[in-house]
Picture 1: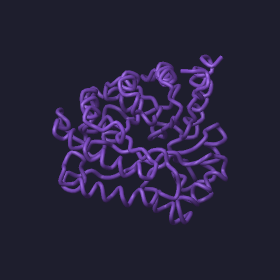
Picture 2: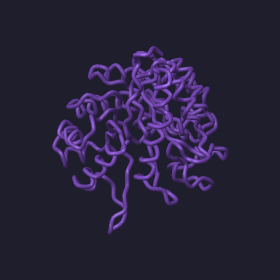
Picture 3: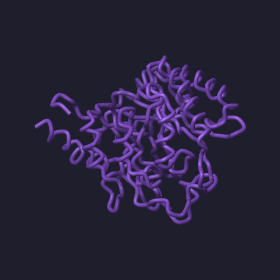
Picture 4: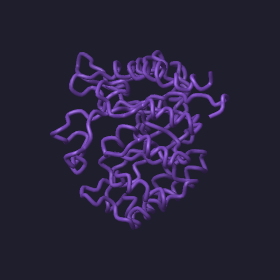
Length: 320
């Protein structure tokens, strides 16, 4: 990395809940709740936010358009919306990347999705590249080829809007092991199918996030930085309907950066990011942070402190 390379900026993926007199609520409850959320995120030093694209209906209802919502975000002290996560229910009968018969539906879905979000300039639209496969084999080799093919076509479409199609691998997904990930990207067009590294999800699946980033860094377009204290050693990934909620051996999978007993080596991760000259955004994510006494506000403040005082220092040392 040369001395002119700037450190990445930090975005917050908008998982959030708080407790009120009537119980838990999230930031989409009202404009006031959203104002408080955004100002807290800005106050601790985040530069932007990410969101889910299924929030489009709440955005349209409360703000009128995605452009209006982004303007509201900016009024609270943040730069913009960087990424959106495409949340969709995968079903082999109607919507599954491994099943060619569903590819027309997937492509049509993204034509609609990209039009809805065209009022702002996103960096990435994030997808789960494989369906949930609840067996040890996961997606077949042919299935990996089919998934790579449809995401390449979707990536060409998103690129028309200046947006990367990027793949995020859940520990319970069909493309979860190191072998599956490597094989999938061996088939996928690097120009149109990017890689979005989630540090905790890879650790849970017993995939070293630093090592897999090193192997595929040229196509990485973003990160979810979060920690875990547990690897899936009980085949919890096979649990229906949601391994993150259904596991009886692990009540809480995800923790903030800086947590005690965390498995992710964030300092090694950041050095690798630095050494490969990455200058994009890094997103902090706190999925289900409020389980077993946790708190989104606390986790977010701790993670931002850690990013500023530990990870950003790694860039500054080189530049000095």
